[in-house]
Length: 367
Image (cartoon, rainbow, N blue to C red; front, side, top):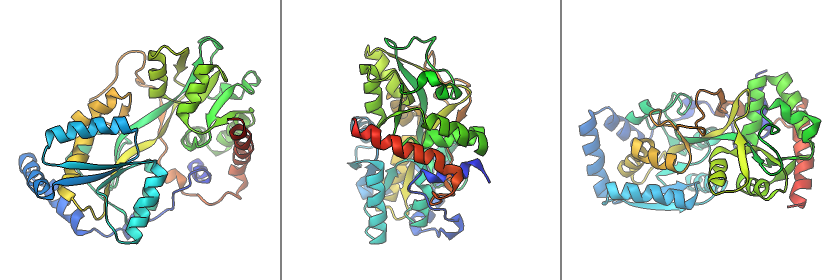
């Protein structure tokens, strides 16, 4: 059995669905035809169609201020298009998208959330393939072969530590170190850090990954809801180390003068699942949707996201200096690794699940 199947115990929104069930809608066929045109002619067709549409609707699972930066830049480039943005949590927007499609009430054009939602969206026929020419600029692993998702950015997860409580020399440097007794009761973790666990299982394999995950799960973890809160608590000295900190959060806190620093984990850097831009299978404004998707995947949009501290998908945008992930080994959870969701009774994954459940309740009671 593939180690990746164990990830299914922890990802709540994935149902496997063969891509062969997907039937192209007229809007998909239209954009496929436009995407085959020469670059200048393609752009002219999209602009002409978008001017008639006048607006585009984006369901945004992103920091509101960051999203507004992107919207402002896009509207400056395409002043004839108004972006109607609905900002909410990824889970809330996913529920809304599925409800709309069941009711055949097609409201949104684009939707961004974690790539691990791809199969449930495909099963609902809520998204379509969009093979934009901009896919050729994306890093390996940031897009699927079929064209359903095109990644905008991903989030490397790092060890964030309080420099007043732990020196860099003392701070954990490897995943395996986290199971040492010296860190019992001193580690913080998000209560929905499924991607971190997925990466551990994928990298180490089923047997060793499950055993290591169980040992870490029994470390009396300080479990809280939300990575930003965890980083704040580390900075405040609530506990010394956050094991699944977001890279951009660490950089931001450090630059603000908080007493924190971070290490890229060894032997690999876990990466929170990709944030792709999905195209609705029935977009009310297909031409405008294509222009906005292209902007988000193109260099201008990607540079704005990079300025927000994101690890972006555009392979020609590479950070420099100590915050550069460089050529370190990274593990990005694939949507396919959630193939076994719904098998909580299987013993191979339940050890860590039971540990997380027990410490989660304790941690939330003490927030």
